[in-house]
Length: 330
Image (spheres, rainbow, N blue to C red):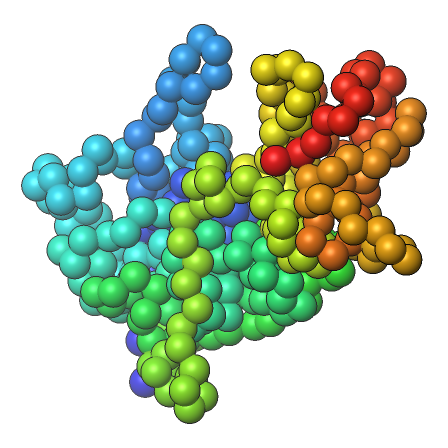
């Protein structure tokens, strides 16, 4: 059923915060769609000076002269009244916080979300990280209508994207950002044309299959447990690179000194040779290379960052840092 509406007539409110959402907003604005307002997070203090920083979405919206709403609470009556007064027919949500029912049920054509996974796989806050961390070779983007439970709504459109063997989160993020922007525009067009046929996620699960969680990443999640297999740690490290970054502690047994290292990139897992059975976390290094033992092989560290320093290649790090004899990672 067509809406008999042109894209210029469809009033859209866009909800988003980080750069992942900017590409979709840009595509809508440049495409002549009628974005009547942008809702984003309040400015937050950041950096050494703790100066207030605008979100990526707000910066773009201000540059393009779009009205910006920054409610502290999405349930605030004044905000809800302001939202209603816009008389928007469609809300679009990308990388934003969970909306209360009073918000997502407001527009007559519904509220849809762009999610960076092939739902029902990877429901949650960090779908790209977990897909790479788990060693998946494929991920994608999904648009779906919002409902009560997070990331469970009926699927509108979906498209897959390969994950390369050497891809980190940044590479996958950037591909999905562009692919997702294409899909947002296609979804809006389908809603205007009345050609949308949403599919319940329950129908997309095969017998016995369960949705995959993608919970928020915390500091402990990023810690490298060297007693795990090399393949698992290879994926773990690239699944957290460049942000928030996997980390380990360099321990010098001869002193109480501890050095925290963020690990951004490693080489392919190298199986132990012959009768090699080093303790996990053991280090094998020379002036240019640094390998760390895992449960079943070595990982050659290629890019790292010492606490308080800049990210650098390992050979540059080793030129300025003398590894104590017998030190290890833990």
